[in-house]
Length: 173
Image (cartoon, rainbow, N blue to C red):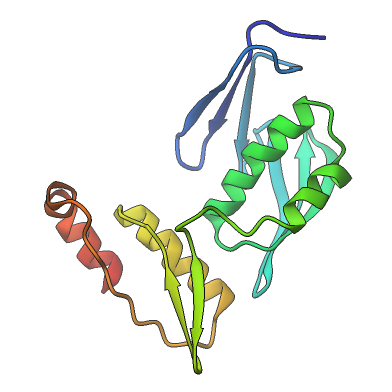
């Protein structure tokens, strides 16, 4: 049935609160979602961070919705995928339909763009906040556990760089 209230999606890993617009088929007015919190309506279990992506099982209200194998890297990408999976579930899509679409997902533009130069791999990512830089470095280590990382930070705004200078330095040290 259609629910004119829409639904809320809250990520208890990062505190993000999203409001899906009215018109979505919803089961409840509020959903919580996280990578592993047992109290959440939608959650991932059996998470395996691999060098070719992330595989995990999604539970919806403690029932298995499906197993997923995504060609993306980092916990931040897993959290984003759970938001997508939540909406797809509410819209009545099967986990097979969702998995099929994820197979061809290569990530957002300007995030984790890879270029090979000889034996080196250049990863360009628009991370501009200390937590994003930390997530990107963790994702690089997931995909390339045996590679040496040389990180170059390009500031985009003086005010943000000034505000987070010590945190950025700590993440990059």
